[in-house]
Length: 117
Image (cartoon, rainbow, N blue to C red):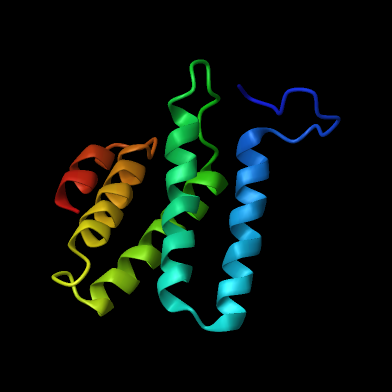
């Protein structure tokens, strides 16, 4: 399902989710809730990967991929600072998201860069 059923809104579900994550990110930033900010960044990056699973999905634009990588890396930075042992699942999951996004890059060596990460 790409759009809300029975809604007059023209935004796709991905656009709606991205907007809500953006609002949450700004709110948590105002509250200085670093962990929640990292979680928002994680989900904003993951949203792009989820979009790619939809049959017939358009290929990622460079801007969308760049933004998703930025979100994923910001999440990684937080979990790196907070301690990999304290938040093992989040630490590993965020690194996997970065690798999966690196793999989406339309250039030679993208898969090798993803594996190195």
